[in-house]
Image 1 (cartoon, rainbow, N blue to C red):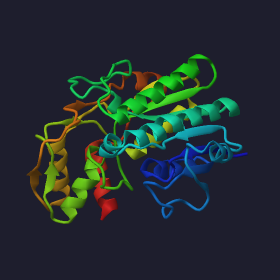
Image 2: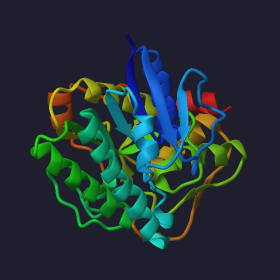
Image 3: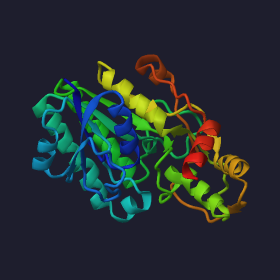
Image 4: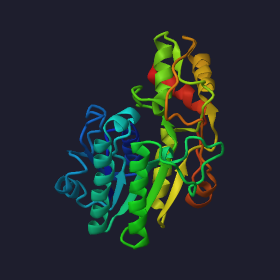
Length: 302
């Protein structure tokens, strides 16, 4: 009998890549997505899609029917949107996650929760460890930390088993160039392909830990098979400057030039994962470096 999983937000960028990955591992898949930031056209035919919101308890319970696992990717994550509309951010991310936790308790199934490096301080100058504290700069990071705290409360009460994965800057096939630095890679590639300037905000000296979505899928699979409840960074452990990223893309794609633009708020000067705990306990280490990833993505985009 095939294993069956519910993926919330499965029609999004990471979800679509994860579905393909898990199908190859012989999993049956239910997807719950309200299509607020995605569409159906790229979803494989051999999955069970349910259009719905994680705040709808009845729909959520039905979507998890016969599932042994929930991978919770659904969230409001667009930075400016969460700042302008914190109520929607908290409602979706926190209230929705409360429903997921309740579901996992009632059905006695495991939870994999997609968290974020945004919970770490913006002014850090060192690799972030899982135990590091944050000042929680935005409604998005506040919502994600609240979710983590709720999950940890119920794991400590032995009510659920859960693995929290703090994703760093995920990039790869199928990512839309429509958000800020989380999508800087497809933004730069699109600008280069259209012979437009590659727009760099602030100095370009900001450093980011970019991890390929293929590696993220592998990390999630490791978390599925992990026997305990814990929190792990999911990155590469290596950070590069934004302007170096742009130069890499220009080198591969030729077109365009660098353009420096306005200063923006909430832009971390340095963001990089300390991967010691993840490598030691989750047994995960990213395989695709940024140079290889860019070459693959440019071929895919073209």
